Image 1 (cartoon, rainbow, N blue to C red):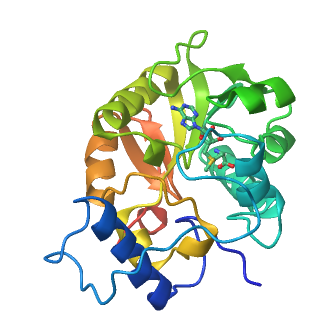
Image 2: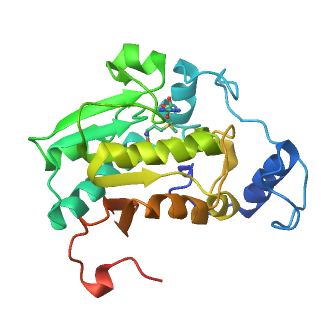
Length: 249
Ligand SMILES: C[S@@+](CC[C@H](N)C(=O)[O-])C[C@H]1O[C@@H](n2cnc3c(N)ncnc32)[C@H](O)[C@@H]1O
């Protein structure tokens, strides 16, 4: 079965995308008929054998379902490590020094290995909201909304976390990421367009807030410049890029 990655890659699944639209139309005012062509009002329930319930804690069942079980996971360790290697290579190529790494909402910590492979002198700090993961993996407990850390970090990762926050918390989180980050930020969330075109909702946590890419870009642009592949750098610290290697459309 093809891997389903929430908002990152994955084959477009028009039927499922329409179902996802219906879910959000049904549950909240995030989607509306003016924005989307709604053809069904079927409400999907997460599939699979896990006992994870939407809205439940980030507990063992959540990680079993979305990360550990090949048949139901959203992303594999190999895919996350490949992305970590790409982020590291881009930063190395851009001469961004990486000594202190903060991975906030780090989950199972799958970004750690590829980053330390490229930057062996770096120190990795994993922070998690999940008490379950903190106990099991030794991560520091905290929230991206108000985690203070110790000083600033050359590289901050925040991958697939902010979709769990409401608008006020999401703005606070992005401002907090800017405060914590002195160099580069890898930021990812599934956006409205991703829900329309890319995500297979049967392999994704549906208990999230859906916002447009434009909304996220507006918040992030206050502090950062995008250099490609979801990697941003603090304004004023932009590396020199060849024109045709910059993000363009
Ligand atoms: C979809 S997982 C992503 C895990 C990891 N970043 C990755 O890409 O593999 C979302 C994670 O965000 C964490 N999380 C949710 N709300 C959070 C918050 N306010 N602050 C920090 N982490 C949070 C959850 O505990 C969960 O482990």
